[in-house]
Length: 527
Image (cartoon, rainbow, N blue to C red; front, side, top):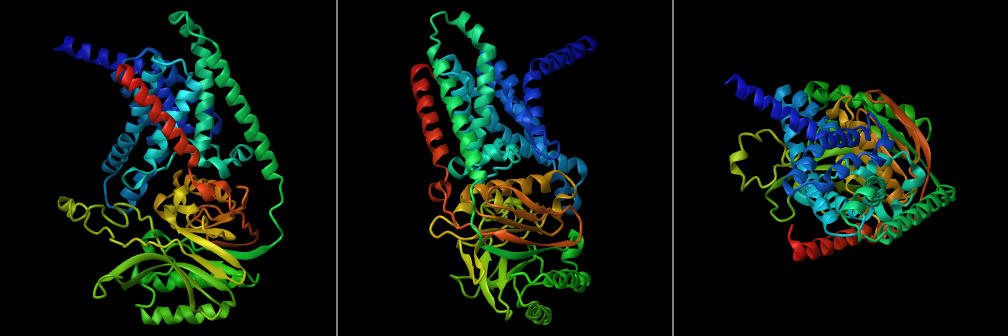
């Protein structure tokens, strides 16, 4: 028995040693994102995995990619445990286990990438610098769409502070930035494996590698020159003065009846300080009103009377109870943004379109009836269906709520028909505590600003709130868990970009190319 135990331990250690390159890639990928924020690591983080895959079979390739994904995603989305543990009354162990399960699902995409990449490089003369980014980005895009989508930790986001590079997002989007990052990983891999591949295939011609390298170099030259021009180009001289209010209300107090007055007094106090700056627009965070607007008559009337004193427009998040459009006898709940004019009349309502699964609704609740007990207490809100913009004397804007900001295609739909002057993102990141979650969430907004050339005003209950201009520069930002307000004159930008008009055309082309390559190789030799 002892001998068998020693053999098992030895096999386990050997497996760890064998998959060290995959583990290393996963760790490097994870550290490329906040809070570690070592974004330079992304440019070579995949190299250990790609080199390791060179001569591996199908099973080993998939497993190695899966292992890379486990480390990559667990490091970047570990923060989810905080909301589950802190506010879901679930133990720390079970909370971490649920995060691990989500990481396992997301890792399937990396495992599939590794399997396809390994297969492709064995059967084609196309170098890694082309093969790797094509399949990586296609699967990354699929991950952002499938099963309601979860594009968090897309590799391009790691480069949020490389502003010159990411200006081209207004053409190729964040997935295009992922393509650039993975292509450099491919170049390094090709350099490491060139001699070995030449020995394995003496008849292998050199020109595909050098031709591909030339394309990559020209692409980067274009991107850097384009970025330099865009950053230094003027945006116009029309401005709007906007005040953002960060109430810093603790999550367990937001909906406690005993704290309703405290919550409202906090927002009123900060707002009256901001009013001294004579802002055109005052913005409160997601679900800032601690009651259902128009249902609690006393608090609604009190809020309206207060709003009339501000002499400004006021946008706030609120839960709303309204009649269903189809069944008028049925009431529905929405997570909404309400805009009040200077007379406290509602001039605009936006209902959140992309709800959080298992947070704001339970997917397939009627079919998955066995989940009823497990999901007891989870809100069941109704999604909105209109990409409506607010039209005001000081400009027009779209509003996205909470994690809607991480969906590029959703955001651009506010502007692709008729443009606007800026974008507002109201959110409540109190759920995430002091983890990396709020930092990653804020940085994704930088890409939405550049993709659509729209200033982004982000207002979070506990932070991070701030102003981002249409070039992705952070003009002002708050700290986490501080009670504060900020007033800023933003430069409006009515530009309609290539990305706004056409969406992820670049990644569609990459995906079609990937499918053609894949089908061609399956036909020749099977996967």
